[in-house]
Image 1 (tube, rainbow, N blue to C red):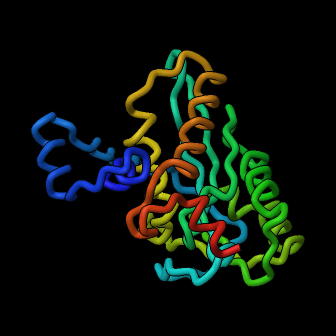
Image 2: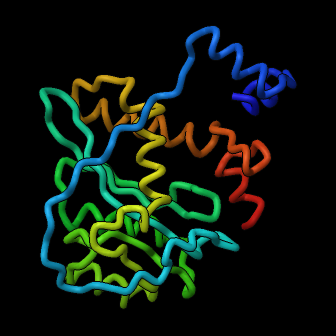
Length: 218
């Protein structure tokens, strides 16, 4: 809010004053909901936890984090959002939304992200979901030459950057909306991610958006 007022209205207001005014107007943040437990599966191809919660990256396309989350629309129908976050600037590298949670969803997200972003020092971190432990994902690793890193069983914080993004997307946008159709949901997610990349000012980037911060490094 501080950077939005500063950049868009040229108002340089003290952060404490903003907090006081927001409190007076009952403008409070959404409480993030706890993610439910997932059904366990027997992995085919696993990898060591190379990241080991060291989320710092010195440049773009060094450490990516990916996962699939579900969203509801219509009459409690379920859609699945697959996304990749670059921990260097918390950019959304790629994302795909589908009615099916299958290998194609994950592989399409990977192909979209890797197109034009190849780096032989890239490490992609995932949980141990069945798509990421599948033979098809292992073949993608061999084809594109990235390293794989996987969370330890039951340790969701090992994949914290993408978990943080899910919480941000849902608390800032999804929980405040109702979607009558899949197309409406997809359009809404497109709108939010465009905002996230190009209009959401990040204090640790000195008020730059993820897209602006990434542009400085490329």
